[in-house]
Image (cartoon, rainbow, N blue to C red):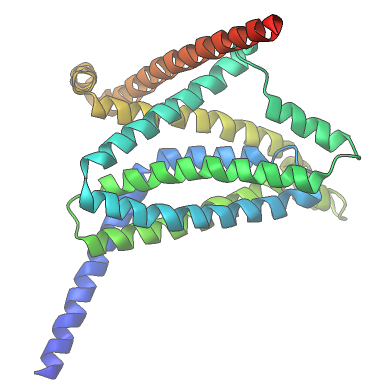
Length: 310
């Protein structure tokens, strides 16, 4: 009887692990777009930091990311157990944030005068150029900002993953989210560490003897800025595709409209759906940016009027 019970227990564990493995793969696929944005954004965060401080900054943000997920995973599980509709609301909020961030990047790139200057980027360049600036204190502020951004993206990833495991048991959901959170953090920041050091590796190989080694070094050194630019573009597109997809699925008439139009394109239905999600995401994001910009300018005008009165 004891042997039979043990075999039954092992069989149950095997079934649970198999289900968890399948659900983890599904959740990973659904969060792929946000992961691409997460990778691009974190790699971009380190640009401008002095070469000898890049890896310490990446490590510090990675530790903060682990803490973020240590908070977010239990919180997401509790919310889904107590009041599941709140998960959908948070997912929609995350979608709005993604399309807003994406639209702000696009507008800042093509119409820089429409928005305020990128003060953080300017401050970073000035700090690196000025030897009198305390770079340690500056990096601490930068790391805190990166960890705050990671918190929002991590929340988005976890909520999307949670949505893909809606029919699972609490144990299965807990395992899926935990595995995904650990794997994502290690994977993302491991890749970021490698990406920011590609140019240094290229320089190192260029100093070595041998034509082939030097050629590889030159290729890596030349490829580094192009890779960063590609990741930035890919990350921005991912914001619109993922954020727009979330919003479209959450708004009934948009969801039906996109489905009807995409269905007309036949074999290109999935591509059409993605494009429409991205376009709708950009439009909604641009509207939010416009509203925020108008409100910000109105507040600025009020502050100037108050200052003049005094």
